[in-house]
Image 1 (cartoon, rainbow, N blue to C red):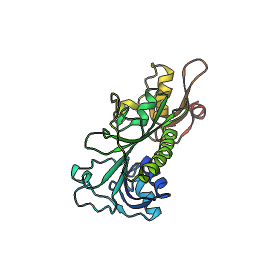
Image 2: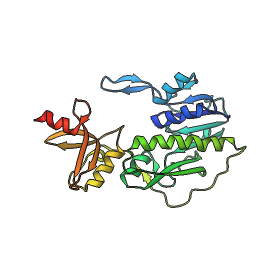
Image 3: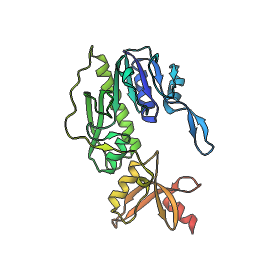
Image 4: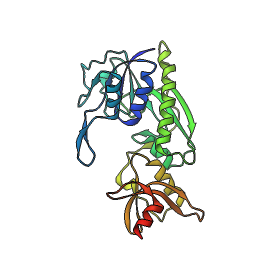
Length: 266
């Protein structure tokens, strides 16, 4: 068991936090402030904060992390935190970053989504030293796993969280982590933009299905079907080689099978 702090905000970070708390003494959670969410734009807690509250872990939510931050641990695990950690904080203790890709491939904001969109056969998790440059720190541990032909981003993130916790158990058990420079040419996983969500139905069906998988279940691909705009949550390549939506959500409506949605139109 190690005494650590965790810096996490998004669902992937929340999942890793929960898994780490089963094996380690988590002294504090550093997370982003509550933010408006949903149609009513009411303040909502980050997913990692919800986990920390349930587990009784102390929570810090500064607008920006700065010198003087009291984390009560010599090591901080960073996972989907979403804010820059300044150099003065990085120099005060060990900061281990969890990144859901095989660095240096897919540095950046959307590594799982971009890996699926690109048709990568595998991805993985990298534990590396947090440095000022984006996801460029030397590597302490890395593990690869395949991306299945039907895996969506949710499935890949869940597998990455499990792999991350196992890797961290090993790294945290060492008296001093051993770091090796990243090998190879980096690629970058840009943030998902509105135009990345739009399905151009003139594109190959395999490509469109990868986009749907990459954006499910958390973002959603968008398309115009039967003259109406919908979010597409599941799809496949049909027997005729065409793009076949399986689950859609009309604007202002709920998720349903594409077949039920089309029946409603008639």
